[in-house]
Length: 286
Ligand SMILES: [Ca+2]
Ligand SMILES: [Ca+2]
Image 1 (cartoon, helix red, strand yellow):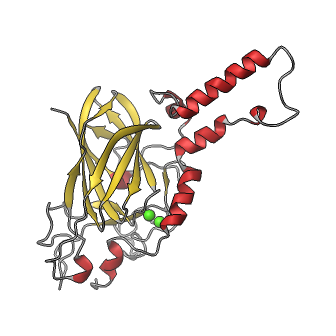
Image 2 (tube, helix red, strand yellow):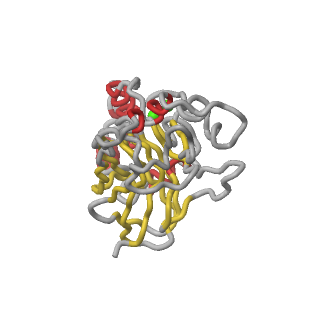
Image 3 (cartoon, protein in one colour):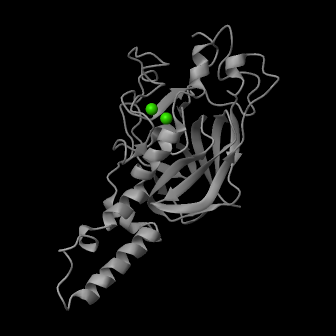
């Protein structure tokens, strides 16, 4: 593999961030739900309720507004009941919903397509089938027809090492599949099974061109916890295309509360972008 192609691997700049933010507003699951609550009966003249039905009409409007404002109910039950995504499985990975505590692989984001299981700026996968040419192998063709951009860590390459380079702050696993080419406004859902209700600390294995941040929803409810992702740029790095391509771990400042059983986590690229995201590690908070 040529060195120049790896410039693209670390996150291309050809994707318009302005465009992604526009999509975010339209496709974010909470926004979609809010739109669904905005029923025609509430706004269309001529479809207003008959005299005597105003009280229940007003009440239904208040309930709809409450649900929209509160992220589909504080416990996310409305979101879970209407969610159309399903846990990822393929010919090699049979695990389905991922387990917490444990490592939750970003590239095993849910099945269901753009607007349901994820939102990506464009429908092409710029890793699988593009940077990593389609050759019949599992890794090169991993989810190659989906919009989320995925690649994997490559060890032992010459003349320049790629993911096993000496400037890593944390050594990643070999052939670790990850989500890359990220820009603000993109998101993906991860269906998980939580073993026990409680507080969990969260960290992410990543590389990043710029300082940025991730935010999260649990069952459609935005969480206050975020992960600040620091740039992994290193001026001492002698290989130009690899200058930011150094793996690191970042953790949240405070633990997140999760309820036992099935949950859907939404990972948002909140700011910065051009991150490669390998996995989220959830552990019971001390
Ligand atoms: Ca894409
Ligand atoms: Ca992308």
